[in-house]
Length: 188
Image 1 (cartoon, rainbow, N blue to C red):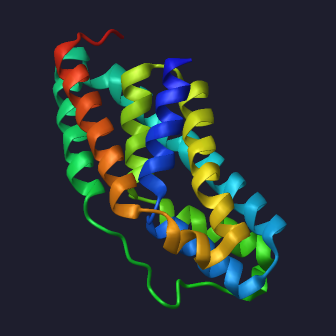
Image 2: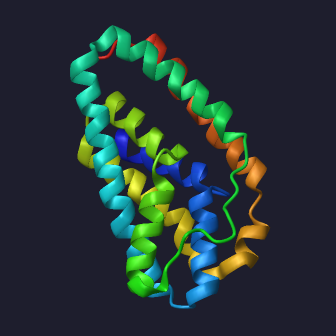
């Protein structure tokens, strides 16, 4: 349950002001069809984060616990620093209406999430907790917690959320996870 709760919280906070949240706002304002957008975000996140978590668990078995502990600890601290750098989204976003609202959302979110903070966090969380289903469920829920309001409420909600505070809290959580990871032995 710890893996689920931490994954949910970290990703929900990390996602505020992230490029994929900006993408959710863009899709909502462009298509004005929240249900297919929300479903597209869910499917894309589930597939992307499952793959990321699988990579995290695979890395844990190949690298070894000591090296992985240091790598994870340092990567959590680096994620804390990255959290303090705001994301921007290109105006165009590469969207194509020919795939429909759902298809466009799935493709756009999947591509936007590649190498994103939340995807890298998912790799690290899966390696740290060894609970792939709980990490994927948590990171997916965190993405939905941050993005569904963006889709439903649009730019008004995004402008009212204290992004710097949310990113600061997420950065602190990443530092704490990094320190805990560095201080505790990992097991295979």
